[in-house]
Image (tube, rainbow, N blue to C red; front, side):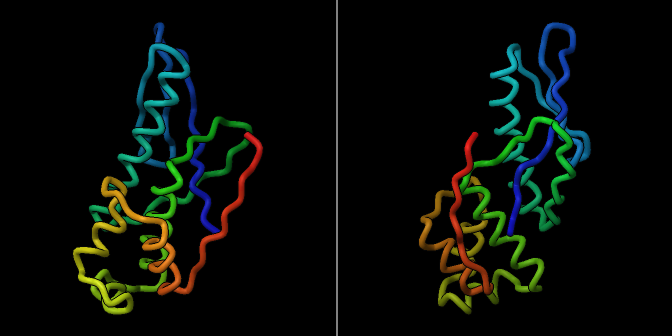
Length: 141
């Protein structure tokens, strides 16, 4: 099971709200209001995940929450990260996943790129080829 909720520290600092991601090398963003800061934090999280995937780096595991605010990426980014992490855990290259799916290498690269649109059925196929399956749950906010 993949958990992509990353705890953040929200700090009121000189008239702005500062949001810090301790799991991503103390990366931070700001907003004039708490709502703006949270929206910026989601954008920053998606950017950090994209950068890690583009650089072929591991995604950090979320640290324990301990009553902190949690920021989650979009469902699509979470699924793309799941494919990427499964590939890394299994030692499967993009070339090998492409071979398993009967796709081109470039299709797999686009599939795991959070900035590139993908279809749910493509992500499900890739996860199946990696011995995973998608299970959707909806929790109360």
